[in-house]
Image (cartoon, rainbow, N blue to C red; front, side, top):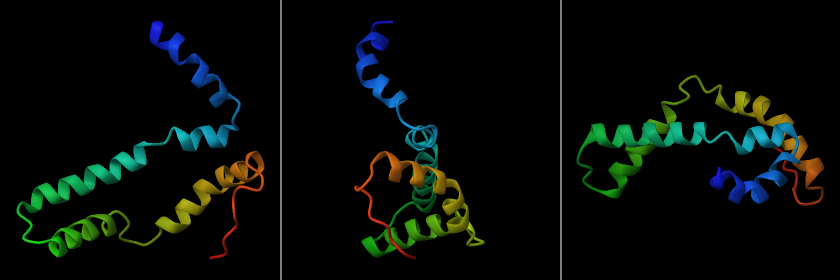
Length: 99
């Protein structure tokens, strides 16, 4: 109960954000999943003789997350609503990119 009362002042402004923004802020699972897969790949490899070997191991682990190459399309569709909400909420702070 004390923890909730102490953190309430920081939590209330979070509720004022759009639903899409709150969903993005709370989605640390994807980041944790990538970190876990990299740790698993490095642990399975064992000894890495140099930095280049470590980079190859991490690169292989990351590219194996999306072998079909469809990740960018999924990312765009998942983040489009959130990016629009960020653009409205923080008008003038985001710079559009064309890719």
